[in-house]
Amino acid sequence: MDKQDYITLLAHEHLYNWTGKKIRNNLERLNYWWSEGFTDYYSRVLALRSSVITLEEFVEEFNKFFENYYLSPVINEPNNLIETDYWQDYAVQRLPYYRGFVLALYLDNFIKENNKSKSLDNVMLDLFKTSKEQEFSSDYFKTIVKNYVPKGIDKEINEYIEQGKTIDLANVAKVLPIEKITM
Image 1 (spheres, rainbow, N blue to C red):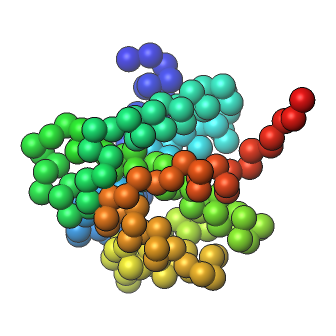
Image 2: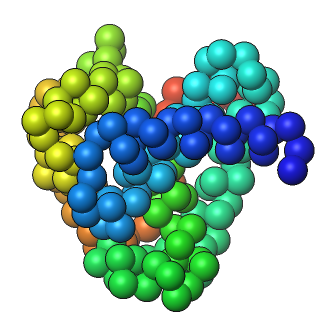
């Protein structure tokens, strides 16, 4: 295991204490997209923010997740089948990590686009603040996000998570802070 893998593994396991334990989640397999995928997203984001990894390493990690997600042989596995097939197929085991990671990236930037002073960080903090009273669920997550994106994300959760439709890279690119350079 190289240094970068070790750092991201350590960050993932540390964050999982929040996303997988402090924020109660009794339907864990149905919510792996969140508990594992968002944890992977934040382990990289926080490593970059704290200068533990460089921007180049960060981009390399993101590219690996995009590659693994978009080339997954089970990319369109519906969420209910992930719950049942999880221990039978390694590709199915990995899918919630990749799908959740790509969705977290999309949502983080979608929130920033709709509410310039807010981000996915605010959603995560709200989830943590209410975790003693409210267990995590897709519906509760959608309710929290609606505080920052008035039109909500019902469509995205239904299509990308529940139905397993491929998260359209064009939609992800639309909300990313990418500048086009014309020559």
